[in-house]
Length: 417
Ligand code: STR
Image 1 (cartoon, rainbow, N blue to C red):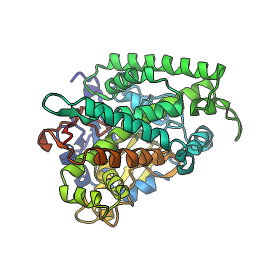
Image 2: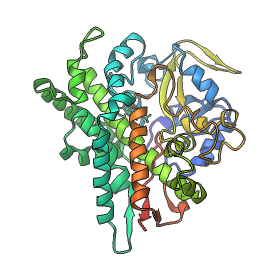
Image 3: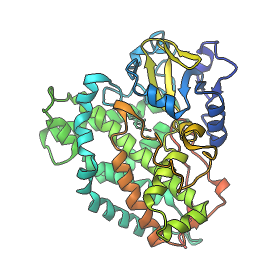
Image 4: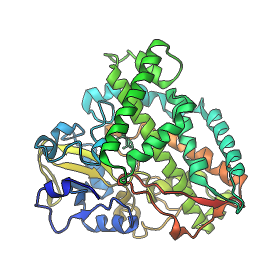
């Protein structure tokens, strides 16, 4: 891998450092190693050192700590020029001004409108449209079966559905969805050369800026227009801020829900006894969704927060200027939170709703309710239409994409039955 930072990284990485594998060859092993490395573990992200928190209780506390901020200028390695835009993960942090990168009162100002638009009550209004998209994509799935009956559930169903939903919400025309899917795939993949990644981010900025200008001239009833027009709570958002929020919504809304839907299908197909209980109505789909969120989190590692002062966690200190990642996949497997069998998928687990996969504190995922609505429609619709759904290859042959921060698979070949 071409990574100029390997050589430039500070040498004081302790023996206990967990190197995060860009190829994601053994995610379960890595999750376990992180948990074993301690509450606060040292990690190596393509040669760049950071801390990560691996436990539920401590993550909860840190996510409420105002001494941790998202502003990249608080990062020592960025200030000193050790980390630059040549680092392949920079786009996860230096993503422009938005609710994702700002804290405090400014953060509230940037986020209010979005979180108000995504409450469970407001989402009821778009439920019929999500149901319609789902039915259309189930038809597409049926039509896409090859001669051998095999079809890729990811490409034909799990991937387009969230893009349509977030596209409708934000006012992104359907003609652009394939382009966006392609760009985000390249953005997240560690196989994409960094100059290409920076170029595609610049192209996306132009695309989103054009869209915001068009909506400014001709507002419609989508959330992008609402963000442009919003005035309550003080200053209206600037163009840069609307663009930043729009980018964050499309990137997050598209990528994470793919993982939720596919990981749930995979978990059920590999635990047929539990699938039977769900199909018999003994356990609800909400239980499947929550247990999937806990057990196989769509976001593996969330980059990054920076300490504005030394922060002590147990025996360790996150030094001023150091970076903290939140390793949600390890947190979902926390034994103290979920019991000794935390590594087992169990939809009847009493703690299944007590996961932290959407984060905690001021930055808690504003799209949480939306993702639950999407998965809550998609999963039962899929299994109702294709009750004999099964994997077309052994489960071990499902490969993960070389993406360090998201938990996403290359493809999910199924037989519809
Ligand atoms: C991708 C690149 C971009 O243009 C904007 C953003 C901001 C929101 C980020 C997104 C990123 C990456 C995926 C994130 C999302 C917020 C939620 C999502 C981190 C950096 C998660 O995986 C939880």
